[in-house]
Length: 359
Image 1: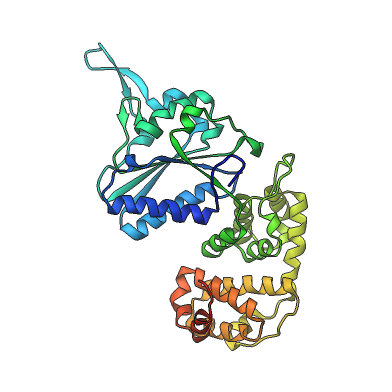
Image 2: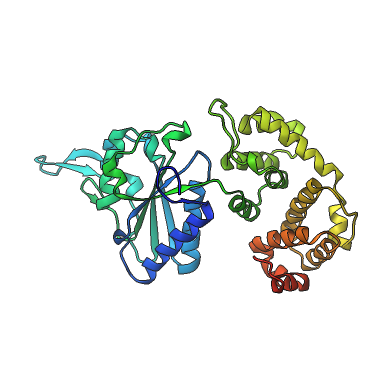
């Protein structure tokens, strides 16, 4: 339980709970309006927005319906923007309100809409007040949300030292609240699936306290969002840390950036990854940091090759290392959708599952 008196969940827990609830409503043909609108609280970059996209993915996967997310940043809105622009009717005797384009949703049975009111606490109180109708009555001025629309809001807490206003009690009472907490295990699960650069995945596993860290004074600081930015720099610009170091510091700050640069040097001492996959052999490291770095590189190589023979040989090599390494490697392999079926057929994996490996 958080200090605010609401339940604190990891991103994975939130995804599981909300997707299960919405899928139950869909299967029972129960209107979404019978379920309360949801408010996700948490520090900047903790994964609230990504979590909503994962909820949409789970709904699509388990129902076959197309899920469309309308992402509304209330910080950029005025109250009139939510209601629409007033104009005269045909005989110029009454005012009518034009619906904003962002609320033009497909109301067919094969579609599920998610109206995501992001950064709601950063919006001025007058704009938050205009969201009352959306969250409770599912209306916007004279316009109604379609029956197939889910409403989810998200924002930072006042204690996060971000741009944030206290939510009016009347609005708060219209929402079902969850606080999203930092969870390195949940982040690791997502990062492996997403293909986050191995330097980043390995470093956060080695030093989990660096996932989110801010003293409130730094302009650039580490969060799950900024680590994804670092990963994109390494994946799409260059993985030469020296070359892109100023950009990395610009995302996570000087102190964390320097520690991350030192971590990347560990990868120079790894055994030959290609030899591991093509021959099933290689030198066996002894230090913990080398175990972590090696696992992150093997996961990257397995994702890229997607070859059963090579992946089987890499698992054979892992049998030379401690069971803790092998178990974590198999779990990470299993997390990757593209190679999951290959891993499930491997005899070492099957034995590990029988012995209690959880995947």
